[in-house]
Image (cartoon, rainbow, N blue to C red; front, top):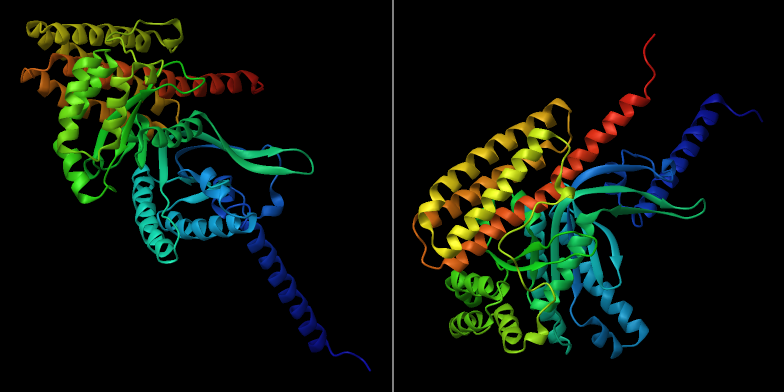
Amino acid sequence: MPVSPSTTAGNARGNTDVSGDRLSTITEAYSRFVPREFLTLLGIEDIRKVELGQQVERKMTILFSDIRDFTSLSESMSPQENFNFLNSYLVQMEPVITAHGGFIDKYIGDGIMALFPASPDAALRCGLAMLERLEEYNQGRQRAGYRPIRIGIGINTGIVILGTVGGASRMDGTVIGDAVNLAARLERLTKEYRVSILISEYTLYSLDEPNLWLIRFLDRTHVRGKQDNQSVYEVFNGDPIPLIEAKTKTLNAFEQALAYYHLDDLQTARERLVACLAIAPDDAAARVYLERCDNPALCPDNQRAELTSSWRDEYSFGHAAVDAAHMNLLADMNALARAVNVGAWNLTPPLLAQIQFTAAHDFMIEEQLMVDDEYPFLDLHARQHQRFFEYFGELRREIERGEENRVYLAFRVKRLLTDWLVNHILNADRHFGHYLNGRLKSSRQKPDNL
């Protein structure tokens, strides 16, 4: 019996529908292992078109989180109980990350690495929401007779490379860059200082609304492979309200204690920390520093901080005007730190004015170069310049008021000016330099038009 054309067409449509549904199901299954957001950032719509070595540079905020004391906790459970526990915890956190514009790049045992392409503020809001969800999760654990768990969160912002690595038969999506390493380092430091959330100075200087967050300086830390120490900050919005109030009340005294500690005056640091703990007895970070003051053997090797920094050849950018401005800025910042430290207040007004003028001129040159060369990360770079002037203005007002604690002010000059400049040169400016060199090489390789 002949088959009618309408029947043939109907079968074709049916087969197409089935194939489409099957492809959709396969794509959905793959997305559980390779995030759609990752493919989107690579400019790929179909996972079947992923190729080894595809990569793209993006500004990103990276969040690492980890369960405290997971090893000892897991030792009391069977393998099946371990997997059940981990999945019950992770299933709580995934929707929180997604709801705040992030996506999970990978699970690392009991840890999570999440990426936020839009804004560092979104990553901070996510971190606080994760702590809130953890409170709810812990209430359920306690009702079931299990002990509550704690997590630590490290957040950093920077330029990273997203891409595919591997071999012919097995490849994976990954994110690489110094920004990733520092975020992981910050998460590990939350254990050391017994705090919930730590951010880098790069995240601090990139925030859209820094005034929304309760932030205090916590440490200067060295990251493997980096040439200079990085400033680390605690975000304590997620603490219990009484502890928030106590940390807010002792904020200035705590940072003064840390200034003495890092400048190797442990006795004065101890006195300030004892005073802080009298008001905020549950301040775990203050207690960690007090323990170090009482037992100097516990102090990290990089405890000592010099007030001044010498110019190094590796700070050179390769542009004469920019390098000259950087050298002058560093010299003036060093002079300001020394003047403040000895109370030579008559020297500070011209130094502050000179730093303001030189920085404005230098940043204008840099940003114009970026506009001329179509640098894709101009907004991120300019935001860091803007934030520098905000913190410089705050510091300038403190100096002009004649703040009586000279050591604290001198350390703030080092931290907010000198250290910032060196790290800005070695990271943001260096990245722009690599970009310029890459464009120069590309232009040299292009054949001349005939």
